[in-house]
Image (cartoon, rainbow, N blue to C red; front, side, top):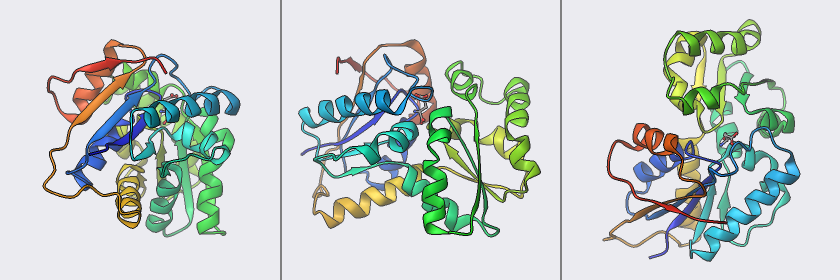
Length: 261
Ligand code: DGL
């Protein structure tokens, strides 16, 4: 029974794993968090592409049947430049799909890492689906370290969030894409800051949906009854990983395999 491979630059991609587990509970998952080389969000397209190629090679070598690139930065910068051998999904297209489906006005905000914003991958994916959309993007580089510090919902995060998102709020967006793996953990504070008139969209659920239909089309879904096994690999065994993994997937003993890719 081959697992689905999922990778992210760190722990945040487990938000996509949680969505996959809900949508495809019979499937096994092999997760790779490239914690040794995090953050990807401030790196160049060439570097992120090189890291992504290695991560894809690692997962392929471990015998996965398909790959989900849960990292927004890798999805935005590297996936368009690569030709993966296995069925592979990124999170940008599903996130754009969800944003277009939710927005009434077409005025859509995107918050993401610096590299994702610079790539305009979300803007392009949104405008492909809705050419008259007005996309306003904003990099929020302090959010990842705040989440890793475990500061998810307090006055410091709220002040930072207000400052970052002020131009989006002033522009009157009605939908905001959480275009980074860590940001769903800030959802309560972001919902408060943006108010009830702005829908928050993250790509985890829509990505899980895309994977489910893609695997079904390729006849790669596991045949029940299955006995799913989940395995987590990291390239550096750092303390925040286990803490945030507990927040996303629930507390449990979760062995981490230290790997070199
Ligand atoms: N996983 C990255 C993303 O979704 C955020 C963390 C990083 O900068 O590596 O863009």
